[in-house]
Image (cartoon, rainbow, N blue to C red):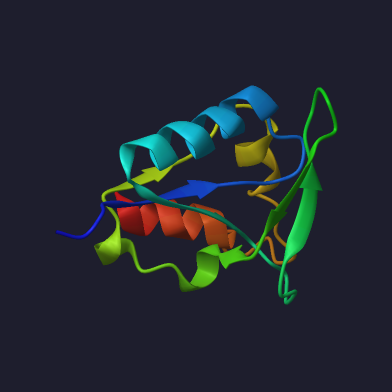
Length: 104
């Protein structure tokens, strides 16, 4: 049996305790958890947490995420969801918002 797959959105100013909790608890449970973000054309981006400024590197691209393969899509609290709503074209939904629209 294959492990359930979960995607967790990540961005700068994330709440470290929440992200660490997802990482370790899903690992313990045998869940294939991957962190995804808008990569803006980069191969990976290193974000810093809000309280401890802990670095977190993400190479998962939310724009290529296969929703049908997921058991869950998690949007963390705080600034993550705010920052993922940034867009260079106000006439279009930001990619993270479009992802959530498709998920629901």
